[in-house]
Image 1 (cartoon, each protein chain N blue to C red):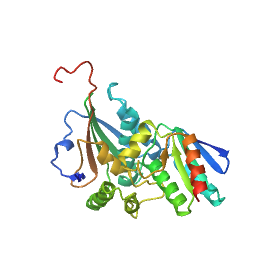
Image 2 (spheres, rainbow over the protein chains, first blue to last red):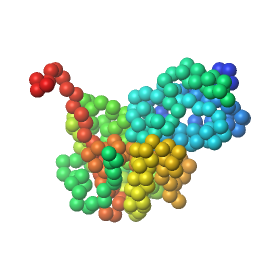
Image 3 (cartoon, chains in turn purple, brown):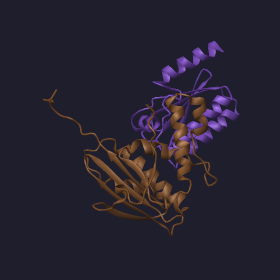
Image 4 (cartoon, chains in turn red, green):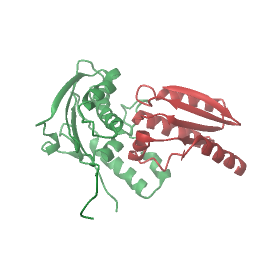
Length: 117
Length: 182
């Protein structure tokens, strides 16, 4: 799994590429945990290049989102597709996760949320 | 209508019948869980779509057997029986562990989780996102079996010792041409 960070205004886009499985998912958790410690407020996790997720990956997304919510920060998850979308649906978490279409949608929603704060 | 799906415990269930299934045996090498799953899935006919999802679902069963059943003891085996067709997948995974003792508790937990979902009450559902035991570690998602029960629509069955799980999935056949009955 590869993780690339891009910054747009005060939002960090975390581009994940590869499988989010039992061997690799912890890497994303570690990255976001470090970012939370650095007081970063807004996050987009982009899954455009992730075609495979398992229960470990789902667990990591749950962990990340619940921590971000607790700290009153914002997360959007973009470009969920294929079997990743299916696994999230099978786990009944499609409506729980803050899933949006594209990175652009995510950034727009984050800007709107910031204005509302 | 609230649908109460649950894992069945029944030594005599037909899903535990191994007739006509091929057998593969693996040592409990945690590093190779996904490789084992791919070895099984490669027997599936090419007509089956979403092979990624099938591999993932089988991989979860093997992971549970290797990690929770056999405690990654390399001397303990995982036995996998499987049969695939264009219309179904039937898989049985057996480990040499003591069995999933908390299965009845898991069914209760899942019932509560499903009720929260039916009510779209995600605040309440948060308590039931992950099923954890004193043996769970931080890398356990604790959510694999929820998806197992949804994906394997033909049933999820354990034997009475609870160290063997059998699952069955029906695949929809893609319809071609015009349906004259319509």
